[in-house]
Each structure stands twice: as structure tokens, then as C-alpha cells.
Length: 347
Image 1 (tube, helix red, strand yellow):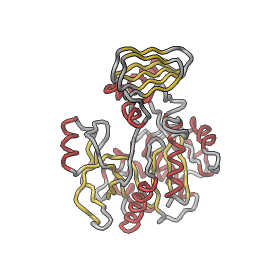
Image 2: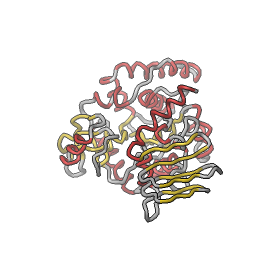
Image 3: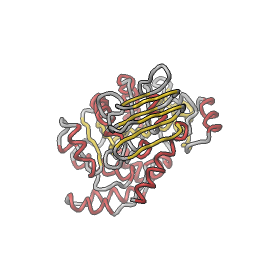
Image 4: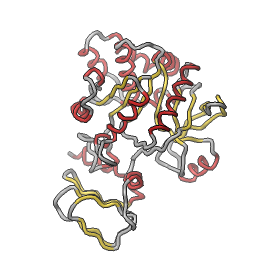
């Protein structure tokens, strides 16, 4: 199997730790390796060949963090054009590299955190086998353990394979209200949409051609380009598209494997706090010159020499870096991304 790690995105929801120049997948948020390095470690377990797809502004960081990766294994996106166009850029590159058209490809994400690598490998082996057998795109969905409102959901449509526990996909649901998310979790019929995709080059080509003709047209243009310069010019002419809207939500015969591993998207400071070490009062504290009094269940980091004091606050996020200072209620940390974009627009 070929593993492709999509290493794009600006990681604005973890500002000011994460910035457009150095987004969250490049950061060592948990442990001593970056999220992308952990993703690469997992990709090497499931893939005989591993490619990484960064945008051009982050390609140098990728090369520095993954020195064992050959130059030919980095597919540079000339400029961000959304996950759908990034995926067809990777498909075009894989085809030009001469890989067999029936070899499965797993699309992974550089900013997700998984501890159970054995369970991860098992789930993708199941997805690989199902895709080979059916010539369909297979998703890997996450069993929800709480009514999350920040994720999309996959609705299952009965067992396709009882032995290997593979389901048909009924539909996709956008980020729900809390009440609706409670219903989804209680029903047992829904999985979180992790964005993982598995299918062969031939399967992706045929599926895109049938269900996403405009995306297929983009793919044909890339195929027709004769030089890297021509491909770059073609790619920059594309309008941004997300893979969910452009393709997966339109496909009628998708399959899904429920993940056999733990999974964290780290899409907010609340998620990051859950994954980080905390003291007996539930506080995660990192950095020098931090003083607290009567503080509980809070995430506090100081990456500068400036002293930081927090008094009488619970369930807050306080993050101080050279790029900015964030003070927020932890349950409202999902709004960090939008606020950080305001700074970009004003700058």
C-alpha cells in the first residue's frame, strides 16, 4: 500500500502556538516529536511507499523534520487549493511515478494524533483488503465517545461484511448541534468522519470521473501538463475545494471501517488539554515564570521570558508566545481560529 500524508492547513484553531508559517502539524504538542513525525511513523507501518504533501511554504520544514524522506517522496503543493485538489495532485504524481494502478493508496492527515499504532495498522489493513475486493473507496471512521459538535459524522447503512466488520455508508452529517450529536452517539449508527480514505489509483480515477466531473477535469489537466512549470500553472488556476464536498459526500457506494484505535484531532485547546499531562488540580502548565493561585482545569503555557500570573480562574486557556497572547474560556476555544484570522486580515 502507498501512504500519502497530507500536510497542509494553517492550524489557526491552536493560535498562537500554531501560525500560518509554522502550523500545528509541525509542532511538538505531545511528546518529543511533531504531529507530522508521528504521522510519518504510522505511515511507514502501513505503507511500503510513503509520500508527504506539504504546501510550498512548509516544504523546507518537512524536509528538515523528515531527513530520511527522499526528495522524490515530497509532493509540493504550489499554493493551497483545498484538500480535493491536493489529493488529485498526489494521484497525478503517483501515476507519473509508475506505481501499479491497482495498488491501494491510503490518504492520511499530518495533524491527527494516534497512540495505538497496532490498532491503526489493523484498521487500515481491513480497509485495504475491502478496497481491493470491491474496487470501492473505503473510509476509516472513528467510534464517537462523546457528543462532539466539532466533527462531521458518517451514518452507517448496515453491515457489508460481517466477518471483517465493514459497513456501507448511508450519508454524511455536518457538525451537529449538541442535542443532535447526543442522538447520534446514542443510536450507535454514526462514526466521526476522520477524513481517512483508502482506494487504488484506478478506483479513485473511476470514482472521481463518475461523481465529481469538475474535479476530474482538473485531474486531466494535470495529466496533460508536460513539465513541472506547466503543472504549477495549471494547479494555480484551480479554485479551492474540500474533498468532502467535492467528492466523498457525492459517492453512492462508499464503505467504512470503524477504527480500532484511539484518535485525537487536536482541533482545539480543549482537545489538546485532554491529551496533555496535567497535575492533581487538572492544570496543564508548561513554561517558565508562571504563577497561579486558585486555578483548576486550565491549560497554561508561557513561551517567553515575560512573567505570567493566573488567579482565580477555572477552565481557561492562557497561552503566551512571541506571536500573541490568548486568554479564553476553554469551552469557547473553538472560536480561536476565527479570531486569529482577524489578525491576518488586519495585518
